[in-house]
Image (cartoon, rainbow, N blue to C red; front, side):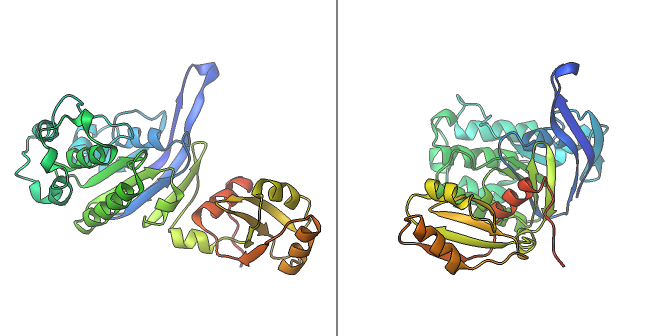
Length: 313
């Protein structure tokens, strides 16, 4: 289990401090996939570096697997696996040499814990003599995960593990994480991809070093307190400018090939009136449908409400 209590971290000189992590608290249950979700610069990596004992916090404390973050850092390093966002293995060493090196650091061998990494490593084993620097993005990802797992950690920290890899490799990676969870490994993953949030058991939505909300992906979407519609027509950028003049619309933004329109439930609104308004503005082929909120919709609303997603009774 992980318990984080009021940790903060800033960088820079005293008069020009940048507050990267601002009084953050959360917990992760054993065997859970917990996601830190947010854009670049939201504080995810700084939190990971503190929890993996690479970086000292300015204030606050945490327990990882029952050990104190600062006091027991040596014990923590024995029970965690860490996959940084940037590929950090030895580029000139082969796949097999990298794995053997990381096994030796933890006084183990590839053979001793092979069953844990078998499903992952078998996909790159045909290239075991190839230099790590010459692997594809997806192959590098699998090698880095194998190295993070080689000592059979209780807790796995993955910092943006699918950034820069193709969609097929992303899907394969999350299937691997599900299998690791079934083996009892606790997984903490940071990602800027909102679609990956739904694959976690619980998530923390982050922005500017703060946690805006923590809950299951399903509950966060369920808590969306507004009515939400998608509008499809030609020229979405022009549509968004026009929608600003429609009084009952609280917010609107591009969402793929659609514009998502947020409506306060207490205000009178009809799709017929909106369609009529748009036709008067010379829009054609208009489609308007009421939809359920996604994680991304919830995140946008949290930002517009200064971090508060109000739930109506």
